[in-house]
Figure 1 (spheres, rainbow, N blue to C red):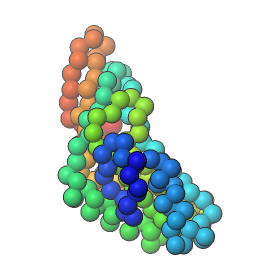
Figure 2: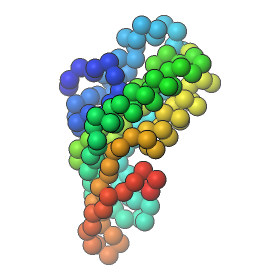
Figure 3: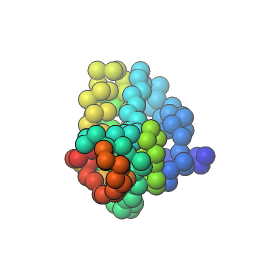
Length: 154
């Protein structure tokens, strides 16, 4: 694994571990103020909303813009009460059902301050970051098809 750089961003699948993300938060200069770490781990669903079997997802992104927006989201959220660190790491590549797609971490002084920020971080990256998903699925009749989806559909 490559060692985690100091910022959130998009990463090639397999280039970052959850352990590295957590360790980076614990290395933060203000981590002694933290009383909690909250994590959101987005994974590939094996079934879509139509009840079809998802074979794989392909994720692509406008990397430069995605990194810029992810950094802005994290910077915005770090200004909230009690927040020590916010990281959002989204992966690009091909993924099978059950594989990790995104890690969102919030380190905070108290849990009451943590959960709203963790939820806002997830909702904002889904709405704002230019990541594109192509879903490869098999319908109930066994026909294979692939299509680009939006976060609003998934």
